[in-house]
Length: 339
Ligand SMILES: O=C(O)[C@H](O)[C@@H](O)[C@H](O)[C@H](O)COP(=O)(O)O
Image 1 (cartoon, protein in one colour):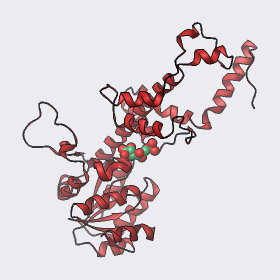
Image 2 (tube, rainbow, N blue to C red):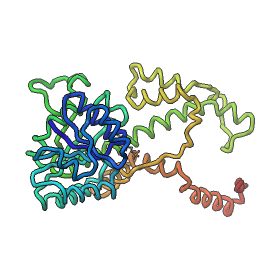
Image 3 (cartoon, rainbow, N blue to C red):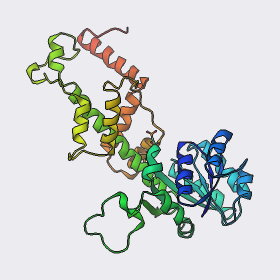
Image 4 (cartoon, rainbow, N blue to C red):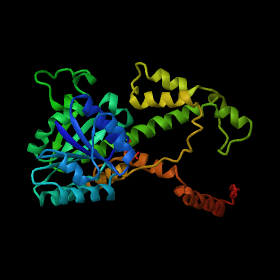
C-alpha cells in the first residue's frame, strides 16, 4: 500500500527501506533535502513539503510521523491537522508521551482525521530484524493500515511459538499488537523503555561488581577510599569482563539481546574508554515512574535505574558534597577536598 513518511532520520529512513523492500510505495519528506534525495535514489517518491506529500498520496491517506517526541511531533501533527482530509490516518511512530497522543487525537479528530500511536522498538537494528510495534487507536483505522504493520514487524519466524499456543497466528506473534485506544500503544512502549532502563542497569551493575573483584589487591596497595576489607583475600580475581559477557550469551539465564550488544561493545573496547559514563534519558523512564506513582504500584527497580542515570551526570555532585560535609562536621572525619 501507499504510505507517507515524515522524518527521515535513522528510524524513519529504515522504516521506508523495509516497506519498499516489501513492495509498498513511500512518499517521503524531511527538512533535510539530502535525506529525501538518498531515499528517492532508492526508489521513494520525494516531496518538498507536507502539502506536497499530501498531494502525492491517494486518499484516504496514511502518513507516518517519525520525528523527535515533544514539541517537534506536536508541530508536525498540527500542520497535518490543517493539511490532511477527513478519514486520513496519522501514525505517530516516535516515542511520544501517551498523554500527548490523547491531545493529538482530539485535535486531529476535529477534522475527522484518525491518530494511531505506535511505539516502535528495534533501534538501528530494525531494518534487518524488524520492529516491535505497540499500537493505540480506533479499531477501523488500525485494521486499515495492518499491511504496513505486518511488513515493519519482525514476523512470526522471529521467535519460537510459545508452547501451548496453537491455531491462527495472532498479530502479537508477528510482532505488532493493537493495545487499546489512543495512548495505549505509547503507554506500553513507555513501560517497555522503563524495563529497558532496569535491565540495562542490572547488567551494568553486575559487570561492575565482577570488574572490581580484584579490589583486595588494590587495597593492599593502599589506593582504595573505602574501609579496609576485612578479608581482602576474597577479592583477588582479575576477571575478563568481556569474556564473561561472551559466555553469558550461551545458555545462561541472563542471556539476551542487551547482553549480546554489551559483549560486542566490550570486544571493541574492553575498557569502554570511548564512553564518558554520562547516560542520557529521553523521558520514558521518568514517565514510567510517574505512572507507577499515580497507580500506587511499587516499581523500585525501574525507579532506581532511572535515578542511577541521573547520578551518572553531575547533578548528584552537590548531594555528595553535602554528605562529605556532614561526615566531617559530626565526626571530624578527614574528607577529600575538592581537587
Ligand atoms: O525500544 C527501542 O528501540 C528503544 O527504547 C528506543 O526507543 C530508544 O533507544 C530510546 O529512545 C532510548 O531511550 P532513552 O533515551 O530514554 O534511553
